[in-house]
Length: 224
Image (cartoon, rainbow, N blue to C red; front, side, top):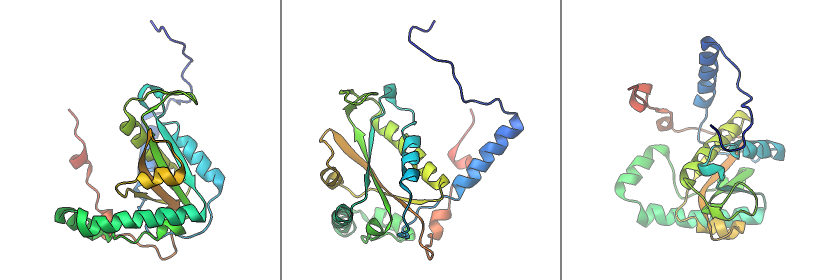
């Protein structure tokens, strides 16, 4: 017996098995074309595209429905220059002194380096923050639950939504990322989770061959 307010479930269509497989396959094919990009065009992206993608992210499941995320969209040239300078400083230290040889060896086939010029070229930077406290309504200050898991799911939906809109993305995680809190003016109880770069790929953009090597189904799943 339900002892909480509820409403009828809507929005789910009864599909045949064939239609369900067709839809799942079509989505797999589309997401299979998604690529991480480091060479972006400066072609503007309509704000409405970003807004709709953020609303998609905001529909993600979360612990106790507290929605423990905040998305800061960085547009100003001054802020983007500051983010690039801070990110490159952290990345330079990572590559020169912090990263163990095994990690650098793993990164080598992808061609990454401390140069993060895309942070000033790509038209969309979204700093994603995880909130320790909050709640389902603005102004709530309750304890949040499963924060990392919830924000990770929301970020995945955001990437999928931007890809669906024809945009390329890059997940950027310089460590530490405390400079994002300062530049974006976010409170201390929020922790920077990830910096998402999005935009149209440059005409001459390339993808490392190593990035195309995806594990087959039998290596990532099992039926029990």
